[in-house]
Image 1: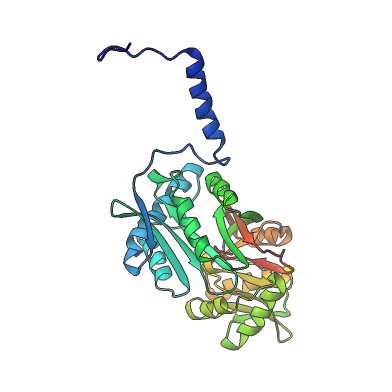
Image 2 (image 1 turned 90 degrees about the vertical axis):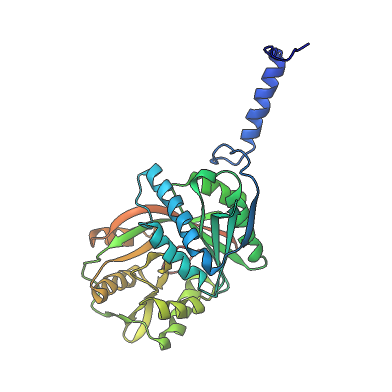
Length: 328
C-alpha cells in the first residue's frame, strides 16, 4: 500500500514496457514528418478573418516564415511583420479572398486564406505561430478553407519544400505533390528571339491570355488575369501579332502565374519584363522545365529556394511552358 509522502513504487517491468509501447505506437500513428504532439494549447476558436486582423495576421505570417527560414538557412519571404501585415491587408480587402483565423486567449495565432476568383481554388498563405505548431491548429485552419471549397473540381497550394511537417499534413488532407518548383529572382539579361515582341498587357488581351491558360491547364483563369491587370503590371509576348505568352505579375512572384507556347517565348517574356521594368523579375519555375531553368540561371537570375505545387482533386499536367503563382 502506498502511504502519502512515500516514494511511489515502480511499476512492474511488464507494465512499464506496455506504457512505453503505447507511447511509441501513438507516435507511429502520426503522419510521417510531423513533429511530436504538443500539449493541448487550450481553447482555440476559428472565425472568419476581417480587415482589423491584418496586423495580427502579419505578425503570425512573419513569425512562421522567419522560424522556418532560420531552421533551414533560407531567406524569409517577408522581411518584417509590417511588410507581412501589408500583404495580409491586401488579401483581407480582396472580395475574392476568404480568410479564417485561429484565436487563443483573444490573440490571433494562425491564419489561412482561400482564393475564390476562378474555377480552381488556391490556398495560401497558411501559418501558425511557431510556439503552437504541431498542436492541430494548422489542420483545423486547412479543414475550414477546404470545407469552404467543398464541391469545386480542384484545390491547390504551394508550400516550402523544406517544411516536412507541412508536406505530411497536406498529404494527410488529400493533397498530392504535382511539381517541384524553384523560386528564381533577378535581372534576366540575355538575348532572345528577335521575332518575339514583349509589351504591357491591355484589357483586350485578357481573352487571348485566358485561352492560353485554358489550353495549358484545362481551366479558365480569366478573372485572376483581369485582377492582375488592375493591381500588377502584366506583360504579353507577341509573335507576328499573335499573343503567345503572358506573365501576370513579373515583379511579384506570389501573384506571377503565366503560360507561353514555348520555352523561348517564356524566356523572352522574362527578359522583356526585366527590360520594361528596368529591374528584377521573380517567378516560381517548375524545375522539370530544365532548359528554361538553365537559361534563367545563365541570364543572371538566382535560385532562392525550392518549393512544391500540390493539388487536391482534378489536375492536368500542363501542355505548355508555364509558371504558377504562390497558390497555383
